[in-house]
Image 1 (cartoon, rainbow, N blue to C red):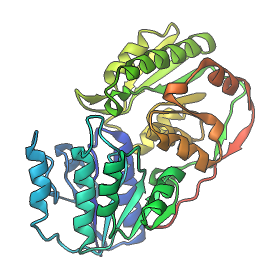
Image 2 (image 1 turned 90 degrees about the vertical axis):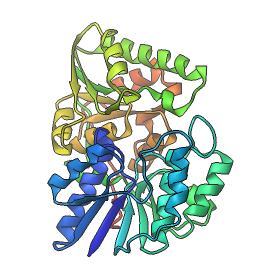
Image 3 (image 1 turned 120 degrees about the vertical axis):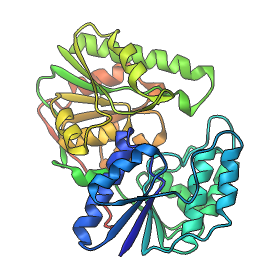
Length: 357
């Protein structure tokens, strides 16, 4: 059996790395003699070779700039993809509209790649979120996904978008939850150490509103930490490039904290080690969705700050919607209520992984 994983992002985004690595491990455990191939959309993806897979060139290249990027999409339509027993678009981001306008390159490249592979091979998206999408982007993408076998949606909004557009879909939890050590959150009686990931969400929108949201977001979190905790562990989970990194906002946040702090870059650590590291905290505040998943996999009480709807959708699916809030709506009353409630309790997590693999 030959299986190809497409549309993976940089390994320096440890959430996307977690999706790909968990998928590789699951495939190899279920199909002992399968051959797994991973498309190399970024140079650092050569790292996957150490896990016994073959890294191959992508059907749609990601090495051009400006308008030439779109030429690479168009030229791919003149090629006939190799046939595989299964092609998995390994989810994560990209299926949302660019802040710069309709037809963003990342979105179009992912959708075109899925369309071309689904012409010759059984192709699924697992796991995936869709949106927010502009109307025209939604029309283009839904057309390109028309031959997709199944869209495994990890939130209800994405599932509903599929149903509306006639795309076969199944609702499931994110693949990384296959690493769950517990299926419950341990809400400790005493909270002394907080873990946190930060995000500069300016990549989602170019308006000045984003900057105001960022100031409020950092201020609310810093006040909460300074008033309620003795220690704060800050984790840099994404450090792909100068324009895609949590490093600078994490360093900015550290300067706002008056209690003992430690800043740790986890962007090269493996999934199990990240889960173990996050487990050392009494409570975790996650601005990156997969940092929330890693923390939840460890059993630590975890608050999800949503820069996109997918995080709120994930928490609803887990049965703990009260633990997530949009970044724009973050306020101290929300954090104080969680800090006060559920002390000493264990809250069940509704983790159900659809066995697509």
